[in-house]
Image (cartoon, rainbow, N blue to C red; front, side):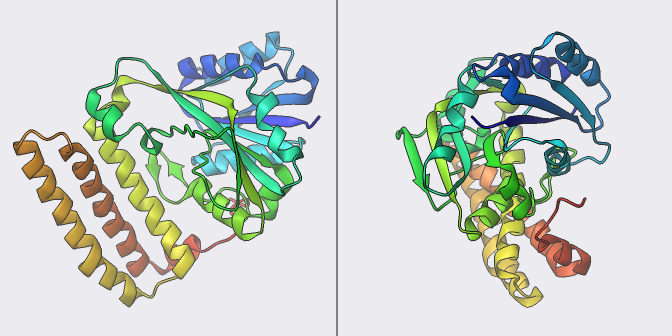
Length: 323
C-alpha cells in the first residue's frame, strides 16, 4: 500500500479545522501509512493549539507547519516539500472526510492507466437550509461541489477536480512545477489547481474520478448569499484571465480588443439582464448578476496584463514551488 500525506492549508479557521482533523485521523487506512500536515498560513487564532491537541492523542502523526507568506498555493507547495510520502492528498480546513476516503482515493493509481491525479465526490454539508435559488443555480463548482453519475472515470481531461479533494503522486507534482498561484488573503490572483491540472495533462498523464472517495464541504450561511456568489464568480474571472494568457500569451493589442469588444459588452449585457429579471421577479437575475462580476474582474485582470510587464512574466512561469 502507498504512503500518503494529507495536506491541509488553513487560515483562521481553528474551530472548523478541529472537525476536519478528526475526520482525517479516523480513516480506515493503516495508521502507519499516512500522516497529516497542517500548514498554518499566518493565522491569528488558536490553530497551533488545535493541531498540537490532536497530535498528542492521535495514532496518526499530525504535524504543524507555519508558513508566514500568505497564499494557499504557497502553503500547499511548502507542505509537499516536507512530505516523504508517495501520494499527497490535498484538502481544505472546512471539509469532513468519510472514513474510507483514503482507502478509496488511492485505488485508481494502481490501475494501468498512467493516472497522476484522483478526485472524488464532494457533497454539501449545509449549516442551514439553503435558499431555493442557490440550489437551482449554484449547487455545483461555485461551491466546490462534485457529484457525477459514474462510479469511475479515467480521462485525459480535467474533470473539475478541486484542491479541496485532490490526490496526486508527489513526484508528478514537482515534475509539473507545483500548484500555480491562487488565493491570497481571500482574493484569487491566479489559477491554482486548474493551472497544475493543465500542466499535468500536458505532460501526458491521466485523471481519475472515483465516487466512493467522498468528502463533505461545510457551507455556512455566509456562503449562501448573493454577495458570496458575486465573489466566487469574480474569482473565476481572475482564474480565467490567468489561464487563457498562459495558453495564448496574447499581445497587449489583442487583450485590449478582447476587453473592448467582448468583456465590456458582456458585462453590460449581464448587468442589464439582471436588472430586468429582478424587476420581473425571475430568480435567474442572481446568476446574471454573478456573471456581471465575473466580467468586471476579467476586465481588471486583462488590463493588468496590458499594463504590467512583470505580471505578464509571472503569469507564464512553469514552476511555482520556489516561492
